[in-house]
Amino acid sequence: AWGPDEAPFANSRRATLAAVGAELVSDWVPFWTDVLRVRAGVGFPLVDGDGTRVWLRVGTAF
Image 1 (cartoon, helix red, strand yellow):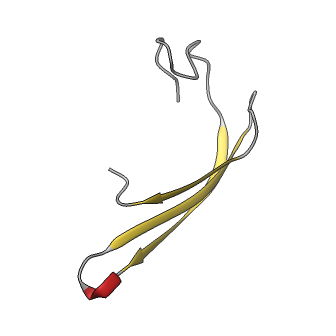
Image 2 (cartoon, helix red, strand yellow; image 1 turned 45 degrees about the vertical axis):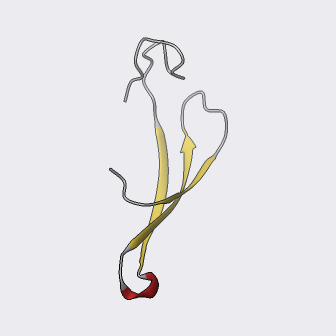
């Protein structure tokens, strides 16, 4: 992947990004009415990284 050539994006030099990671997705059904999607993940940069990234998201991906 490449970042756009504009500020304030982290990859403004359009250098190649390389990383590995994993994500766990769980669908919850609170009160048996709607689906609540919960995603948790971790990523490790392989090139010039600034450490491990961890995230937690509630809702759909798009």
